[in-house]
Image (tube, rainbow, N blue to C red):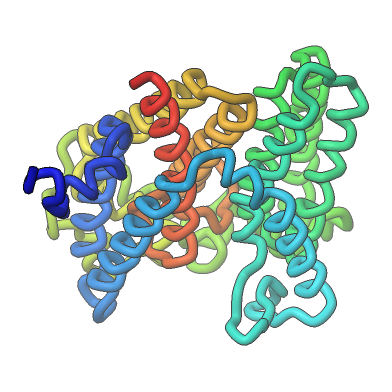
Amino acid sequence: MSAVFDKPSFLQRAAPMLHGFDGPLAFAVFLLACAGLLTMYSSGFDHGSRFMDHGRNMLIAGMLMFVVAQVPPQRLMSFAVPLYVVGVGLLVAVAVFGITKKGARRWVNVGIVIQPSEILKIAMPLMLAWWFQKREGQLRATDFVFAALLLVVPVGLIMKQPDLGTAILVLVAGVSVMFFAGLSWKLIVPPVLLGLTAAILLIVFESQLCAEGVRWPLLHDYQQQRICTLLDPGKDPLGKGFHIIQGMIAIGSGGMFGKGFMQGTQTHLEFIPERTTDFIFAAYSEEFGLVGNLCLIAGFAFLLLRGLAIALEASSVFSRLLAGAITMIFFTYAFVNMGMVSGILPVVGVPLPFISYGGTAMVTLGMGLGILMSIARTKRLVQS
């Protein structure tokens, strides 16, 4: 009888929290985090405590992931509308009396200085997934129109700051929810083709403007400079084109197997700008080469496939849409960062997940992973 009244051990109490915790997803993140720590140790050699700070940010993101993973999707759904309303309200506050740094107004002081656009990376897919869950079984074209309006408002406010990188991430999250909710290919393909055609024409036309030094009225100065730099980085090799040129040199000099850990000359001679943040992929490529890049891409691919699998196995419309959108956010992070460092996309402020230094982005990633874990955990608990 005494055994009945024995207090359970710590492991016995913790077991329900770990039950259903998605092992493959956690393993993929662990490998990517290890790659991030190795790269940060090398690239941040002269940045004081940056390596330790990066490790601390990872621990905070890991703890946040664990906490969010304990919250069931039904509970997460109740945060959708309040979080969206607060996020959009803070974006309006930024537009009215926000803090300007380096020509961009992206921050607001609410007792502490925050960047509200980061909130929308999670709030946007939450809100749209909530909307389509409420409309389950009675979806009409007007529901997608309303969802588009919910998406356009924050994306427009973020682009006005201007912050193209974050706007792209929020836009991808929203469009992903709409696509997974059943938006017809007939409505998706024409705008995509129109956008690609416009982009090609813009590049052709912009190349002439860049050569002639003519100002393009529809773009901000910094946006036109980034396009001109992408088209011809050698035109200003010591100025605007320096980032792309040095990034491509570092990637190319890594060869097949890389120069070895802590042996990157472009990195350690400080030729790579922002080598611990946006351009850390160049530092990684120099030291680990093509083989290392393929391993890194394989890690991200496994993470994405696992996220999509979790979405397919989700037990509700809300969970399926949310998991799919968050997975596409991870894809966009990785694709845009690697693309801009490799010189195939314009330079925008998008970090490489788990590799780049940055506390805010790491927290956002931790929350996203926690939501995926929560959805996977709920499905496994139901099956058991």
